Length: 223
Ligand SMILES: [Zn+2]
Image (cartoon, rainbow, N blue to C red; front, side, top):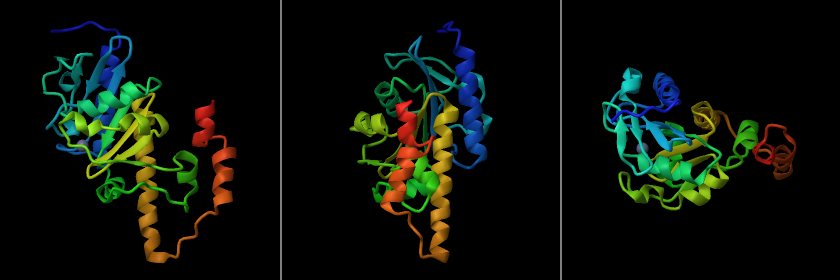
């Protein structure tokens, strides 16, 4: 069941490239994490298959899934978390890529079911403001994405309670860089516990960053 879409090769390449990169960084493994790219023209989602070490992925292994949820290409079975990707990409017509990753520092918050609202980091203030946590939904079922629309419309990176995180972007570069940046900030936050006490920015300092920084999330959304 081969199909001939112009972006086919391009999409497969992007999935393989970022799956390998996330694996190199220790952010995904054989059992956890999956990346997808949506070709809005054909409606096909290109997603990492389940059960394979990401660094050994090749283009033929990328699973291609049509609008009806049928796998139409790829020698390995699609990730069972495709439902999550579909729901997120449906809710965000401005995005063509999704990264679902069990990054340890982010996932620790997800295990606690807590939104991330730290005030000590300018990076966090500029890029995220907040990383909200979606209530628990059972993996492998459609409940994994219950309520995702409201959160993902507002935030490009969210937590999935007791599970991991999900980022969306125009490209996988955009989605993955959010996960990497958040993970790095949280790692540093953890280190501050050794030094402390943490010096939080005041609410007016934070508000000024949100409003005035040219790269801030608010200004990105406005442009
Ligand atoms: Zn997962």
